[in-house]
Image (cartoon, rainbow, N blue to C red; front, side, top):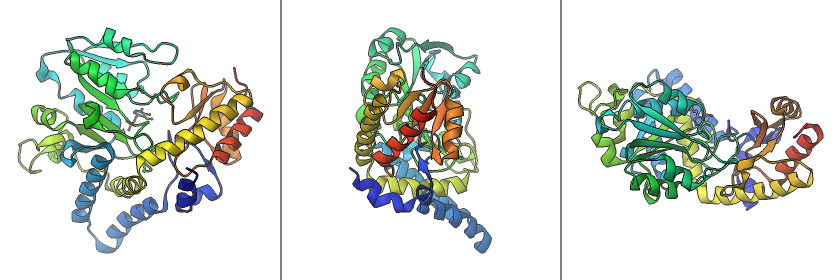
Length: 370
Ligand SMILES: Cc1ncc(COP(=O)(O)O)c(C=O)c1O
C-alpha cells in the first residue's frame, strides 16, 4: 500500500518540509485544491462575475460527495458546517409527534449544543463504557418514543469506529431516524448510506476531505427529505430561489449562498478522493496505523481506550500535556492534533509508515504520559 504516498505525495508541497499527521483536524493542502481556490479568485478578478460557474461548481461538488457516500445528488444539501446541518435537521422533526432525541457521550460537543438549545425535545445521552459503545447501549437507550438517534461514525478524540449498519438496524427496529456525524470518517473510511440504512449523515470538508472550512454536506434519504419541512431553510432551499415551494429532496435543508471559494476547494478535493478510491485509502491508513500502534507500544506509550474498536484510522496517544507536546512537535515541523489529554496522529493516503514512526519518536522523547 506504500504506492499511494509514492503516487500522490508530489501533489502536497507541505510534505517536503513538514510531517503532516493532523487529518482529523486539517489535512494537507493538495495542489489541485490550491489551484481551485485560485480559480475562484481569478474568475472574480479577471471575469468580473462568476455566479453561473460557481453554481455549476456547487452541483459538481454535490455530485462528488454523493458518489463518495453512495447517495443520489438530490439527497445532498450543501451547508456551511456540520453544526448548521444539525440545526436544519433539528428544525425539521416536529411533524413526527415524537420528542425524544438520543445522542452519545462520544459525539462532538456541537451535537449536544444544538439539541440543548431546543426546548421542543427531550434528550438522553448514551454513555460509553471504557471508551467503547457496545450495541446493547443502543438497545437500551433508543425507544419507540425516539424520533432521532445521533451517532458519530468515528469518535473525534480516540478514533473509535462504530458499526453504523448494526446501529441503523437497531434504530430502524425501534422506528427512530438515524443521523450519522461522519466528519471524522468521510475521506478515509468507505461510507455506503444505502447499504447501511442511514437516514441522515453530515460531514465537513477540512479534515479527511482535503478541503478548507466554509462548506459541509448533509445527506437526507430522498423519501424522508420530501416529507420534512425544515424551518432553517431559505432561498437556496427553494425549488426556484424566488418562490416559496420547498426544493425536492435534501436541497430544502439549504439556506443562503454557499461559501463558493470553499465549494471550489471541495469540488477539487472530492474529485481527487473519488479518483483514488476511499477503500484504497482505508487499506493504506489501517496498515500504517497498525504499524504505529505496535511501534508506540515498543516506545512505552499508552493508547487511548477507543483504540480497541473496529480498527481505527488514527493513533491516539495519551499525554497529560498533549497541547504542550503538540506545540513542541510543531517547532520540529511535525503537525499533529492534541485534544484534551490525547495526541492524535491522523494520517492520510499521502503519509508513510516512517512519518508515523518519526512522530512517535518525537512524542516519546517529550511526552509525560500517564
Ligand atoms: C466529529 C465532528 N463533528 C462536528 C464537528 C464540528 O464541525 P463544524 O465546525 O463544521 O460544525 C467536528 C469538528 O471538529 C467534529 O470533529
